[in-house]
Picture 1 (cartoon, chains in turn cyan, orange, blue, yellow):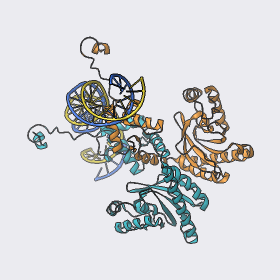
Picture 2 (spheres, chains in turn green, purple, orange, cyan):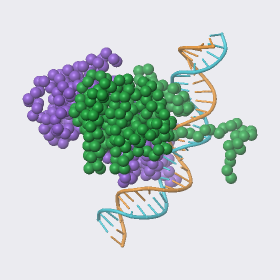
Picture 3 (cartoon, chains in turn red, green, brown, cyan):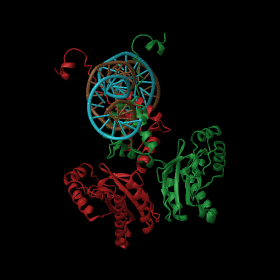
Picture 4 (tube, chains in turn red, orange, yellow, cyan):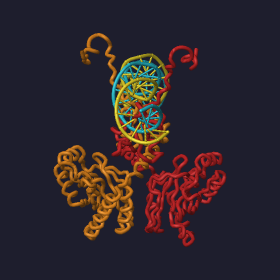
Length: 268
Length: 268
DNA sequence: TTTTATACTCCATAATTATGGAATATAGTC
DNA sequence: GACTATATTCCATAATTATGGAGTATAAAA
């Protein structure tokens, strides 16, 4: 004999039906996700509103998390991601074969061509800069380690989804493709999805001025045994250099990516 | 009228006193800490024993954490820290002024002297490698980003506690100083505590063969306004090079550390 | 072959805790 | 000067959930 909601709080008694509780762990993750997505500190009050959680809940959990160093309290009383999370993150990274091998090749490549080189990976609908070796030039690259941008903004982003089934690729770009700061990034899901597959098959993706003005990016995919793109290695250069030395740079990234795949294959 | 434990389960009724429960968040953190400290994947069974937690609890929480991507399940069914933690960690790092500024100077320094340069920080009783720029030489440095070693194993480790009150320094080394792989690291708490203060005051700490054979390390502290050591920058070289070019390297690290302090002071 | 450790699942329940609600204070803003 | 949003704390309690305990099945030891 099941009882419907209407039967419980329908007629006379006060509507005591309490919305089901959310566990502490879930609330915690909501808080962490919100902080990470906005990228700035927030007060307990703001977090409560953002997570649609009761104030009384959030104030307690935030205090608890601060005490456990999962959050840091800023001078103004707001909170931000804490050092404990960084500790876990570093341990994770240290045990990733891909990052170890790719990091080394990244340095070699950067030294060889004298330019900034990045290792990127995918996290859901975003591309993330996982490691970076600065080039000699003094032009500042805006993307540092940890930078997250929509997949359609970068050459690497396209490679990272190239192996997915067509419908999934389309779905990803449909929900996440957005205009880049320069306004030059392609945003049409169909075009992006097609280009992603082609670029991955080519083993190369080149982009110019899409996410930053006057900055070009030459990226090659690192694939696993099944052909899935598990990450990318890319050279970041001022736009004018592409015309000068494109063939050399293309060869260099391709070689680096091949060496990473090779070393991953042997060890794993 | 307070009731003692003896009065509750002492005489006739079955001893129903249940040990107080540990919250899900705490269990989660115990699990993450254990994985991080051992550095290898573990099964739910192992985790339960390690955390002194009931099996029924751990199996449920681990499954939950895997689903939430806080943990990754390996092929053998064991679990390891998951990508979600890395995501949070990267966001934390990206907003650390110190790492941004120091990372840049690290690259400059590495290019100038042609050697491997590391940025290190302290996490409790350990030193952690936060960033690294590989040198030209092909000798492999064992410490990669994320490496955690006891504070007494390295030149940086000593600097990182130099500003603490004497008793605290002593306490840290008393509980954490341990023999290094080479057996050459100082382990006497009193000696370490004294040397830590001296090195930080000097703005320089040099170590040779303490944590790795034939590897030397020349480290300089980065201090905040209050004089506390918030991190270090260090050159890692084969031992024989120290005698050849010590003065140059010392000047270079000192300069780099000074520039980091300078840039941090201006912005923050 | 018997034990013991590993590996895992399920249930009932006591113990915790996330929640609603109420109270308080300050600062914008209408 | 009334009103609303921000900011925070405290309590009672219903709802969840960590736990104990019991059960099952391998795989090592002994």
